Image (tube, rainbow, N blue to C red):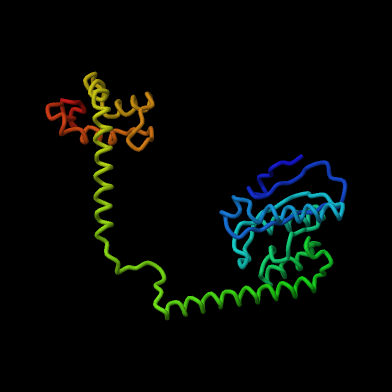
Length: 260
C-alpha cells in the first residue's frame, strides 16, 4: 500500500505496510524539471533499482526524486531520504553513482551520516571506492565546464554573437506592438458593445456600479479576458469603451452615485 506523506514533500512516496525483507530507500535524481515531468532518465533509474532489489530480496520502503543540477549540493529530498534511513535503519540505494552527485562534499555528507548505502550499478563498492569515484566524477565535471567555456571564447573570436543583439533594429517590434494594441482595443470595444444592453438595463433600474458588478458576477458574465471578477472600475471601463457608439446615453454622476 503506497501513501503520500506530507512531511516528505511532493517528490516522495512511502510504503506503509506489507514489508518483509530488508528495507531500502531509493534516491533518484534528474537534472531538469522538464526531464522530471517527462520521466526521461527517471524511469531508467527506477528500473535499475528494481532489478537490484529483486536480486537482493529487499523491500522498497520509500522513494525520493530530486530535480536539479548534479553539481549543486543543496538537496532537500536527499536530506529527507537520509533522515528516514536513520529513523527506520534502512539502506539508501541509488541507480548509478553519478546520479548521486559529481560533488565530493555531498558524498562526504553521506558518509558522515553513517547511513548504509549502495549503488545498484556497483553494489561491491565500499566507502573508500565511492569517495574516489566521486572525486573523479567531480574532476570530469570541471573539465567539461572548462571545455564549454573554451569553445565559447573560440566561437566569439570567429565572430559568433552570443546573447541578444541590442543593436538590432526595433521598428518591426514597434509595429507588432501597435498591431497588438489595436487588436486588444477592438476586442474590448466588441465586448463592451455586447454588454451595453445588459448594463443599460441594470443602470436604468437604479443599480450603482457596485450593484452592476455584483449582478454581472452573479450571472457568470465573463469579462473580455475570460475572468469573472467584475468590479465597479471594470464596469466603468466597459461603459467607456462603448461611449463613442452611444453618445446620448446617461453618464455616471459620482456625487449622486446614479446614472443621469
